[in-house]
Length: 187
Image 1 (spheres, rainbow, N blue to C red):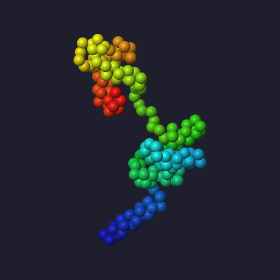
Image 2: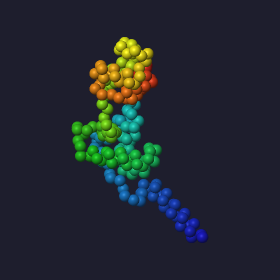
Image 3: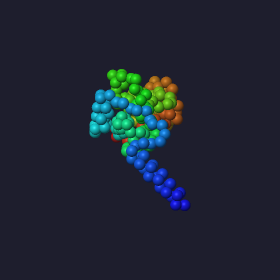
Image 4: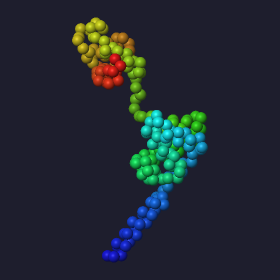
């Protein structure tokens, strides 16, 4: 019994010593080597007061990876998940062959494009739809007291704001436009 306890105690001590030394079992992550310009730009992002916090965290991940820290150490130091540290290390390494003139540091730290169909209604068209929704239906010669999804969709198509829009989508835009604090605050 005494031998089992001693072996378990030794194993705990070795694990703690390995963590303190920074040696971790398993494959080591790829080394990030930053140029002087990259390092300066990343440090500037972390110091800038107006930088988005997600960009600051991503910049710190890359800087710590450049210092030779592994993903687990980075995750522990920044209080993030190991998978987040791994993602941004790998993302940074994927841009290694691209010159800074072609893709600057802040662009390398941006989110990847999301999957799905791109928006078909432009910001200008959305403004026109919201302006229409703010009008009284009687001004558009509609015999109703307030807009419905179907009436709004018909009027949008009649004014050629967009070619095709379903009543349901028009109703969602109407609801979002009226309940949005920024839209209702600005008119």
